[in-house]
Amino acid sequence: MTDLSVSNASGRLFTAGGPNTTRNNGAALVAAALLGAGALWLGGAISPTQAALFLVGGLLGLTLYHASFGFTSAFRVLIADRRGTGLRAQMLMLAIACALFFPVLADGSLFGQPVRGLIAPVGTSVVVGAFLFGIGMQLGGGCASGTLFTVGGGNTRMVVTLAAFIAGSVLGAYNLPWWQTLPSLAPISLVESFGWQAALGLSLAVFAGIAGLSAVLEKRRHGRLVAAGTDATRAGVGRFLRGPWPMLWGAVALALLNFATLALAGRPWGITSAFALWGSKALMAGGVDVASWPFWQQPGNAKALGESVMADVTSVMDFGIILGALLAAGLAGRFAPGWRLPLKSFIAALVGGLMLGYGSRLAFGCNIGAYFSGIASGSLHGWVWIVAALAGNWVGTGLRPLFGLAVERTPRQTAC
Image (tube, rainbow, N blue to C red; front, side):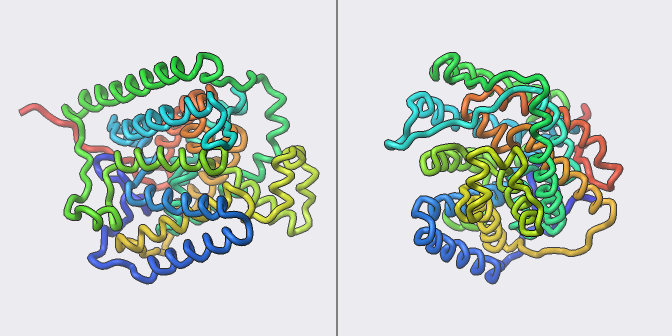
């Protein structure tokens, strides 16, 4: 069998069954109502900023769904079939984000508000965690952002992945102090080390080099760059609302929305810290003394554990992503959950989710917090993360057939 989300020749994700000719009005209306009501409640009960972050999360979910911006499929088709459309879109996203972030982070404030990047240590835990996360991406069927937007879009297999993701995050939070005793370098900021202009120039050169190399590999395998293959039957507002979007639209939108997160929250977009919080709060409700864990005794973490999840920026944005994807799926006429899940696929989702959660805690983030926002912050650990995660994706791609999961390959071009 294949994943419940399958990729076309360009590595873009599409919900199985194709688009319907009519909108799923019920799903779209429920999502819109929850987004509106949630924003109003958050604005009064927490703060207008928290309400705005919730809506930014909704826009992120809509963008991820309509642009089919899946990191997992992009890495898989690059490894298995040398198709680099998704990777090149990521390089554009990172280039825009770095151009926006670096000067602001060097200044230390944005619109009068203090801002900081996501800078983390570079050590054993990052390498091991990112490697495990990479395997988990391929077995679980998604990354952190991919798990949330496919759950919102109606992919029931990814509910299993998300549940296991949360459990793995809690275990990772419990074990993290031991991993932090292993060899590690202090956090390294390229912006602070080289100045933002030099750091930006170096980063842009690397992005261009990676994009160029992916194009060379793709042409060598296929004789040409494989077309993106998006549905161009809609145009204007109709295409914006119902999708699908070109992947490059998604790259630009994600970079801008991450910058909006920086402006509102004072730090970039993250996802997985909320999973550890949700799971730990559930254990605490069951009588487990998670507050005594070293992870939850750190000041910021202790504050989050003691407050409502609705006061947690990452949690609120995650909820927004799910609802934004639900809205997008409804508008696109693609919201049609299926409940049949073969045993092998269930096991892969369970194992993959656990690896995703555990790995993200060890690596101080996921494909968003460590890779996207880490590199956009100028953190060296973001670059270490992607190298180790790609190695894990290579292993995970090789393991997929054992669980009945597809590995997309296109026929080689032959000379006439």
